[in-house]
Amino acid sequence: MKLTHIEWLKLGGLTEREIPDLLILEGTWWDKESYRSRLAYLEDVRELDFPNMYIGSHNNKRVMFCCAYGAPRAVEPIHIFGSLGTPTVIQIGSCGSLQPNIRTGDIVLPDPAQIGEGASQYYGASVESFPESEMVQDALRHIGEQGIVAHSGRHLTTSA
Image 1: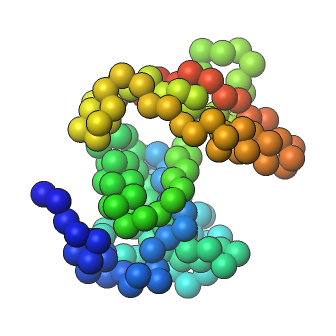
Image 2: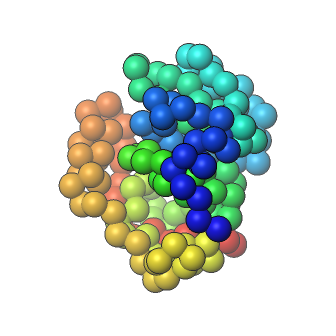
């Protein structure tokens, strides 16, 4: 089913002005705790007509937050808000690493992501997804300026 821009806005209970500048997804089973702690950073928070999707503002930017564990759940808000024109998505949460230099708390930016989770194939990618290199380099620089360790490299998405 392909919905129009206006239909997505109406279903979500959003106005054109409320389209988020940023979508943040957190992959966690502990969503009650996550919603409580993450939404505390936002002002004027409200739940959308889409369940468990919250919009608010931070530093004059519209931010949508949703706990989305696993690709089948994460693809829903990404599809909706990508269709509406939200330019940036950040996925936070847990991941594993086979690299001994990657530690808990480090940020990992996939470049590229090898697709293995089963949802991406329905959005036009079946083997690998490549980010915009300039955005990855900008993110690495900004993260490093904050004193946070960040890595970039091959990433594997999986349902396992």
